[in-house]
Image 1 (cartoon, rainbow, N blue to C red):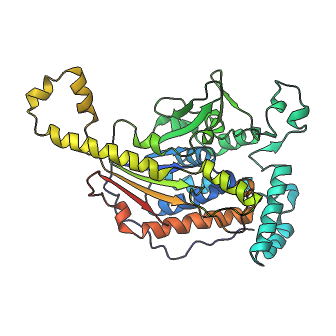
Image 2: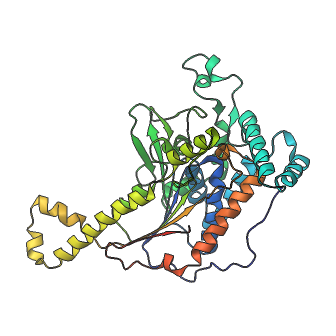
Image 3: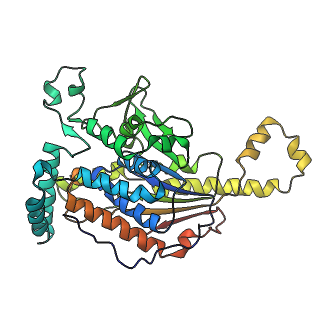
Amino acid sequence: MTVNRTPRKKTHHTSNRPPFERIALLLQGGGALGSYQAGVYQALAESDLHPDWVAGISIGAINSALIAGNAPERRVDALRKFWEAVTEPPLGVASLASAWLGKLAARGDMAHGFVNQAQAFVTMVGGAPGFFIPRPLPPFISPAGSMEAESFYDVAPLKATLEELVDFDRINEGGTRFSVGAVNVRSGNFEYFDSTTHHITPDHIMASGALPPGFPATRIEGEYYWDGGLISNTPLQWVLESYPRKDTLAFQVDLWSARGEIPRDLVGIELRQKEIRFSSRTRAATDQFKRGQRLRRALKHLLKMVPKETLAAADDETKLLIEQADETVYNIVQLIYRARSYEGTSKDYEFSRLTMEEHWASGYNDAVRTLRHPEVLERPDTPDGVATFDLA
């Protein structure tokens, strides 16, 4: 069942490219919640806000690959094909079951919550088409060292899907910079695979989303990698601290909210700890970045008072300081998915068509409302040169 909840009248179009050297799209991990990011991107694409750099973790890495690995006019279609494929009802029970569940969900939050839990159970037992399938034997009775002993699911279908929907030659040609984060299992270190330094393959995307024990580690050049969300679920810092620095308009799309209510039962406790674990520490990160950027801008102002010949004769230590001085500006536009009251702890693996459409529409509408505020696309005039925006 396909539900179109996007408004007919589009009021978020932009006439000119915003006055920034770079537009960055930063996509957090969150499994089935990732269709929210697809909806956000649809609104950005309709506004001709095509990113120069796409960076993601886990499901955000998959969405990033679908965006960077397709021409701008084909990106929304590629995202739609992926999300419709992975939410296809199993066992061919599409029409009757989907329609019945949709009617049941419409009866209120309690009924909707029941439908979501039932759909999540179906995913847990049967997997998601074109994404992952359960292994014939559970890992705890498989021989140690075998692939079957490493995870509950086989992700071979995801590799085939990526190869079908993503043009990796396009990613590696560098038209749109592309980055995904993963964790080295042996060292425990976080690593970014970036199209400016690596030859990107499906394995790099799969490594970023290899969350144990559901999915197995991905081997790349003799090393094994797990989901980047184990250490950092948002690529914001990677983009902000990159060289050379450029005036940047960054859209950060998060799937987990750091803020929430005090839980009152075990289910609520499990959900809240998952939200805290995978949410972004955006305020702390941006506050720290603002302090550093204000110092860099002050240093740049100070250096303007120093004669050029003095700077040319500077020693190595002074040159290090000179290199840090700059006056770049940054707008960080944060869009965070706000879960409904009927969504529970399984919301990140509830791959049903109905819920996918709800998430997609939420992302689209949130982005449309954000883009109606012209200030998010204007250069900041603050002392630190950094402006942050949050729809909430």
